[in-house]
Image (tube, rainbow, N blue to C red; front, side):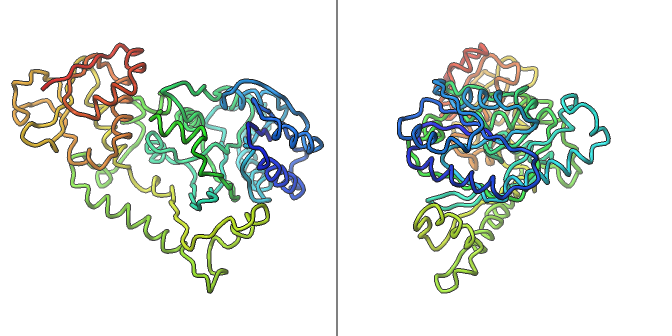
Length: 432
């Protein structure tokens, strides 16, 4: 177990108590080693960690000031076959190590060549394991996770369907490593997960709960969202991954120009069911599916939950059908293949009509253009941040070098991700 500490202060002690309990309740692993990496920690956090020095096999102080480098270094110190990543300000249920053991054992023991050299296994023989649920606190939310499948691999490109609490073979982690968060890139855990999935690693769920501390406006994640950082580019965004890796039946296929009202209704109906199922009443707290979570958290914090209804979202929906973002991206990147110049245009008479074309002469009426891709109306079901993300990934994964546009989100994409476009020698021109 590798744990990264920064400036958690008094919170770190609660996490250390959780780890102590976790170690007491596991019985299958022959040995669990705990390594702490203190990356530019403050005095209070450091003092607390050394008060619990007996908990650790190794404590290292570093000055990376970067989560990716600190995590990679922590993993490199381990001398075990498997590692699980953790942070200094969150918790897991006490069965976590047991659940991880069972998941790893069931998978690797079933491999026909499991007795061979572990380090020689191919990527598609390996698994990465995640908690079955994430429970947010102190502002409550729940996310339920599922095993990966082909559809989820498509959908993860524009919505992270997992988290940073990864358990995986050490050698496999070090082969891919976390990449540094340098603007405009962020979300190092999302990027790692994208690359693992693209190279055939299966994601499995272990039956334990991860308690994630939110509501920190100064956190790395909060700052990345504010600055509109995006996940790094990788194989998962390629045209081959987008359009050749999934075999669909004729009933499953749909174009991006279809009426998507049905999709939106199904999506919100699905989420609404979870809102209803996780509501509770003060009169019957034991009927609350989160009652055990409340009891667990109050063993570390007093009055951690005060709300009557807990918002929740289930990533299982990402296994049910393609998201709007996936449909648009797959069609867009396919259309851009082989083109050097393209235009993103909105119609003068109807600004809600958005097209992509390789005919850059604006004197042509949009309605008469032959070679075009109609993005609307589905384009407007996507928020502006994801529109910009889709645009930059589609362009840099194609042969396009010149873009003409009169669309605000395309121009904003060029503004926020100028360094990315410059690296790929892509220029933009505004057209009336």
